[in-house]
Length: 347
Picture 1 (tube, rainbow, N blue to C red):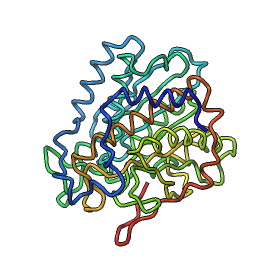
Picture 2 (cartoon, helix red, strand yellow):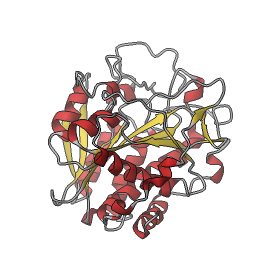
Picture 3 (tube, rainbow, N blue to C red):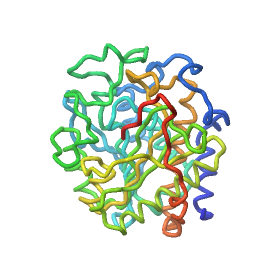
């Protein structure tokens, strides 16, 4: 059930960027017809930091905080819009995996829109936290292992792992890596967070109803999660599904995800009682597997999909309409399947 507020959020999101091409999902564009896979058009770490500092000076409602450092010593930033701690708070987390950057590009656009008023009065009813690049070392290819077989051209390679070749999204129990420690010590334990969307990318060849998906979503699936938290997570997913899948260019499936609490979707829900949603966008910015990377022609709709997701969920939380979101669609939403010959995606 789509509420008026959530429908309104879709309109606001549509104003935020040019409308993606209708043929952007379904049967294309894919790797073969998608032009060059390159990192040259994506924001570098330094460009991201420069953008965040510039927006911090321009936006009275925004505050920029350094929450820790990566293995290689890069500052990890938290964007904060907190006007009243009593308001509900949502955290958007991007780029735990360094080769999954279009969600970060979308988060940057969302930050800019919050400053220009394109998101309306969302901030009147919700606090927003954004970690726009948790794995900066992986995003810059500044790692202690070779990336010779990676596909992208341009100024750098990008890898899933951090500098020590550790998957940060498998470190939410032990919390060994400095990036994971920064997130938990200085965000999860410091702020009273109600909702979190963990934004990732998956492969290019997953499908639902015979059509390639633009992404997939999933709530916590560990049996240790509180059923109330799981239901709130499903409501968060309902807002995303209603606003993305109805666009004509968005087509979402249910993600195939495990129950391990080392994964943020599960572990954070259990440890902090936070409603969490995984959103896996289609295609990665770099990889060593052909079926996982997409070129520049897909960037626009995937960035817009992120902006729509962030805008719609923040709006639904701000006006309370998320409490009325109908979660029954989960019962009939098909789990995405990999096309023959493709490797399964990995959260």
